[in-house]
Figure 1 (cartoon, rainbow, N blue to C red):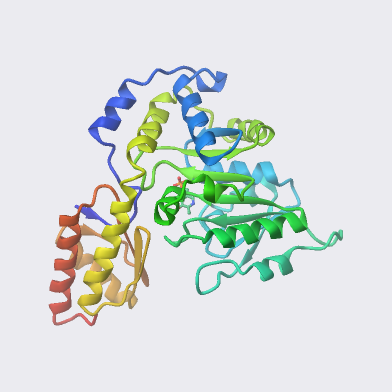
Figure 2 (cartoon, helix red, strand yellow):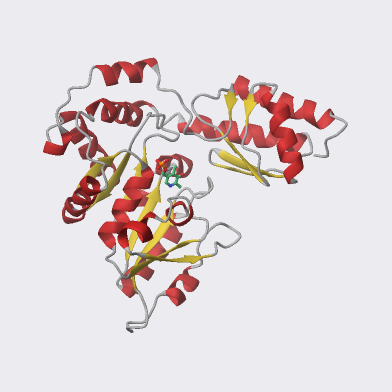
Length: 338
Ligand SMILES: *Cc1c(COP(=O)(O)O)cnc(C)c1O
């Protein structure tokens, strides 16, 4: 199967499994897992923070960040389509009494900073207290420019807010910009990064921040059931990914570009490539039809009005060419209108 649905579908490599099997472990709730401690230290250092916390998922590290930045009755400003608003079950509201203030993204996928400033509530008991701006990078594969992040930092400083970055695909952004991750994260008070997306680990995300922030987040992690015991087996996969799977992200981006180019040649009009993603706008019935057609050729997509095609470690150049060939065949079908 060539699975284009997401970069979460990667299988751990043999070398990664060996690193996991060999991991020295302890009870991480006691702070005694040397491999978890090493992963947290490595990620904190790379991202330029004093401390870090390993958790089972990016949903959880984002939730811990929101619960730590905001109290009950506080609010965070966030994109209407942002993961931290739309795709995390409303966790901050459900568990933290934290109100989101969603704003529409601009056509380029960014939150317009003057509109963010306008959404900050005055200090008035009628309003929730605006505490936090949440950004996402990459966002639908798009990389936030560094000068945009610098401007966002100036904005939050001017209004006494904090800035959290959902950096689920932070390393894709850094590879695309050809900068160290710290060049991106330096503008943020906290950052969540996923090890289980393009980096190819089976499980895990890391939250970074200052020492007090991570101490408070650690309490929330325990409370929300994210305290794991011999988690070094999982952290070892993350360490392996950080050592071996960052540079190859450039391959995923090249594959997305190759796929976009191939589809354009066939007369499709994909949005992208944006790092490791591209999007196809289709009629709903056509999307279902296309998904069925591709499935018969061992290619998986999620049918929707905007089909997301995601490249990752388990898709090589030959697989991209097979996908392009399948689309060519589909374009030839009498019942299709690409
Ligand atoms: C995947 C993802 C997360 C976290 O998802 P989990 O599946 O909970 O690890 C957070 N933000 C973005 C943008 C994501 O793509």
